[in-house]
Length: 615
Image 1 (cartoon, rainbow, N blue to C red):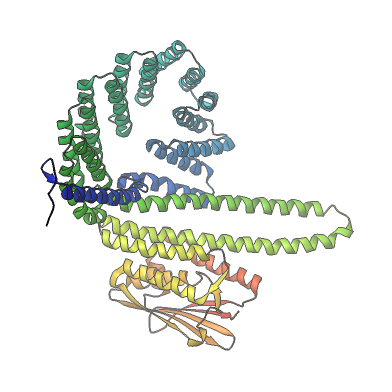
Image 2 (image 1 turned 180 degrees about the vertical axis):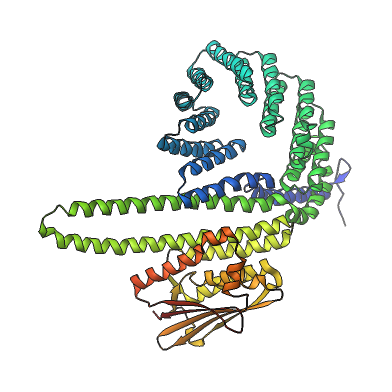
């Protein structure tokens, strides 16, 4: 016989228990999903990717050409990017690097500008002592009286502990920047004055100054304007001036630069809902959060949709109606796969991380080059000093010279191998750019997946001069699959391996064959009007291995005729590096590696033959 059914607010205890379990599961699942997303979401749109991609390319060119002035410019651009992202520690690091280079170059004008930017980043982190020193440096290197007075004034303001002295310094800066019509500097002055007003408990004056700063920033620096708007709203909410806070937030929400950016629009609606919530207007807050949730789903903004959902869930629970959140959870879970596929910011995240990794690699390569240069200089000094030693030290000096020569060859071989990797990465990223430009997100994602696997293999083997043939084959197969995806039906490829070469005991130089495959595809096969063929063969003959790359492309001469002036000036850097590697490998390991590149007379295309002793 069944017992009595207990009801709570019209629902059975079993129903309420099942509901609570379902909601708990949804929350845990969504928190795990969105935590993984939000922990990686850095770039919010394609413009931000381009904003960091440009200085990365400038930095790469500067390091390769040893252009220190361009290198410093790239560091300033990176500092600006991270400052706009409110990543103050990183912006400080890059401004510091730019400052050091300008000091080395004795470029006073750019040194002053970089030092002032550095001071701004330090001041926003409350590093007042360091900021004052940076302002002083900017003043001493300034090229005009205006810059000297402006930076000296800011240095005095940062050092001062008196609010009246700070206020006087800001008023002087405002007067100067109004006279010289420096709207960006004037906007910062009004913000500085607002901070002083807050410390003096003069909130009306603070909000007025922030409004002035907002008006000056919204045309040229919308991101900065929105940050100023948030400061204004926070002040008004703290003073319980909710109507003014709502009007201020609505003003920002109605700006064109917000309306045209759906992701920012969702964020501003959420912030407006927070104000209504603090003013105890829960009904309006729920309405706005529902609007922001719908807009986020419509525009495929995963993290923003989750944020709105969590806030709605909290409001429903506080209001005693937690069951209202169930349809929203079901809706979000049903649309989550589509969101994850369509959310463009997730693709940008991968690009951003690749770019940041590339920047770190460039700096590491520069450090290695500097170390190599220092070692070479040290060697030269030792050699010069050795000439003044007595005859009894000549033999010892010659032995040391031989050891150092071998060491330098190893370092040079390592440097060439590292130089090949960025060259290959750059070409591969161009392919990703094309897929993204063509809005082909599926192929771009597939390409990135293959590309990441290839990069992992390349990086894992980059420390060794020789790798097993099986691993090299895996890398080459992955690379050819990428190129085939890039050029669609332009060519088919075939890889033939002699059965006697199977096993991990066969060692060959890593990524030595890839440049020849790249040349075959990029300079031969892609110019064919129909589908071409690419054959890669590995054969054993006695104690040697024969590697051939055969294609039926347009051939060497026609490929040269197709090259642009810029391409001719580059003069095949990838191939030059490969030949230099072969020479160094022969010197160090006596593998007797030979290479020949010939036109296939009568058949069309190119035949590349590599021969080397088995190790």
